Image 1 (cartoon, rainbow, N blue to C red):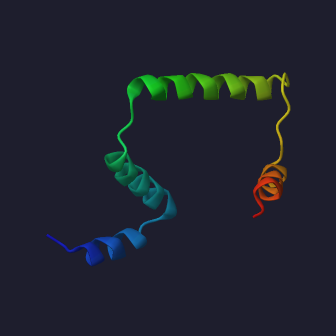
Image 2 (spheres, rainbow, N blue to C red; image 1 turned 135 degrees about the vertical axis):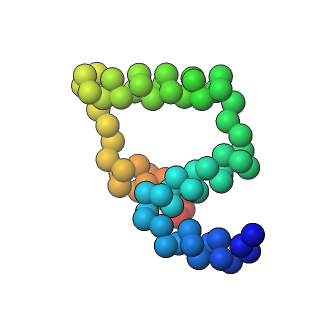
Length: 75
């Protein structure tokens, strides 16, 4: 079985999409999901996406969000 250094080196050579899948998979082993909570998050995300698409709400650009966070928390 390969050691951790070999595994990391091999993982680093993967395309970015596959590395993202690998990271997500590893994180899920550290913090297993709870189906009921995942279901609620999915419902909320779908609702918010529909609100944006229907123009019932207007999105805030990410740079404005992060600037507000920096202003509020002194970053």
